[in-house]
Image 1 (tube, one colour):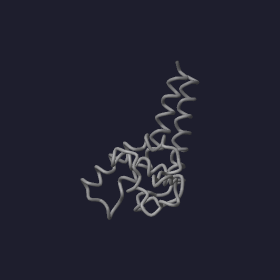
Image 2 (cartoon, one colour; image 1 turned 180 degrees about the horizontal axis):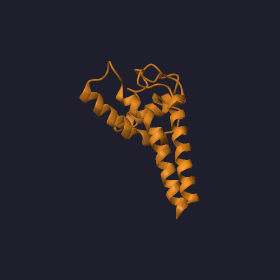
Image 3 (cartoon, helix red, strand yellow; image 1 turned 90 degrees about the vertical axis):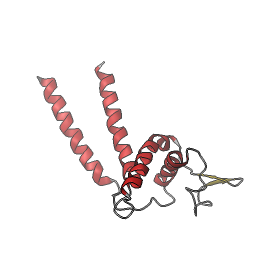
Image 4 (cartoon, rainbow, N blue to C red; image 1 turned 120 degrees about the vertical axis):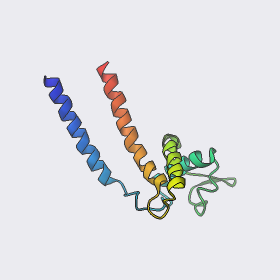
Length: 136
């Protein structure tokens, strides 16, 4: 009985944390692009080149920011690590698909919207995995 109450309180607590997290992030429904030169831009560039080009050639993702990012012998790359870009690239691929179906460039950018949801998805996924692991 006590364990059910604890689980219910934990679920309510996590729900309110997620609601607050929604308000801490930039509203990606209203933005057209993620601009240079922040960490989020680097991670987004990694995810975008994986989802759209299936390579690690950043010439079309870093146009105009060639001197502001890593540049060695004419090869440019974002400074941030590639790990989160790999994990969020499926969300950008789905966003590209939705953008092509709905032609929603003027209303919203599904690619950036779903990219912003990737971190929330992985937070919940890791919580579920951690919860299952601790129960065993």
